[in-house]
Length: 364
Ligand code: UDP
Image: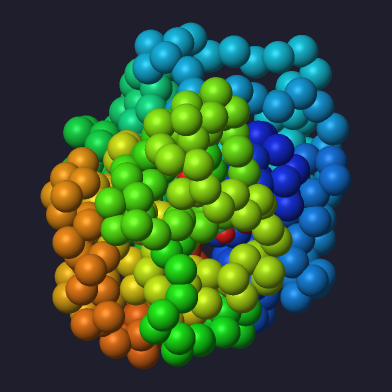
């Protein structure tokens, strides 16, 4: 198959602004290439793919970023800036897909979804968030009625954020296991990893570390400076160790040394890449039972699931984290979330879409 991927219109690949989509895209490219498929990636200027993905053809597009939907009001209208990066990437994608089998959109935005019912070529969408915008949800509902196969989700719980989705196509996510080294140290620090933004709930993890008289190592892009400094001021000095944003290879080495990852989302997390990255290094995860994490973590086997926003339970589970065998964590990822497993699920889904379009062609 020749597959054309459209990246997120928020930040170049490698900037961290695109959140988990950056890694998901690279994982998918790895899986598709290793299964012998041909891949074109359309991404913002300055984007870089992982070195092992150099067989994919990268097309760079210049333009203005979109505003991320999780930081807009739910009822905001769609804003498309002049010299729109998203429109530029779509234009390029539509052109290249004339010689390809399918256009696979990984941006969470209105325009590519709208194009689905206004273009002849198959456009598939990996939806990377829960319902974060009324205008997008309404559009998905309209397009879904005509083309239910064209949407895939990372987790069931994410898909059910869109009440009209009756039989969701779930593709999970994938991780290149060679890139994650298993580490068996049980006495490292506590970790938190993610974009530092309100929907990620860092404050609850800091609370737990502080109650235990420990420090919390925090890795990730500080997306919201005001939010970050507000948290810092609410706790004693030095509880948070700001470790900055690291490239994936350096990040995994650091996370692997940690005793546990604490994950405290305040929104319906679509999946939660950082959870699986920690597990791949052998690090158990304590997370709120909210969104994707509740489908990933095996309570008592690879970590613990805590009632959402119940900070005291977070503390109690951190205290017994050494009951979790680190090997179980790595094994779960090997059995459930490798790049090949992920790419095969995506390919089955894309084949279904392509067959639907062929049937339409036949019936014309
Ligand atoms: N990440 C990174 N360097 C860091 C911290 C995080 O590359 O220092 C990446 C991490 O590998 C993960 C992504 O940021 O892929 C966060 O994805 P997740 O699905 O957890 O959350 P999202 O940002 O998409 O809401």
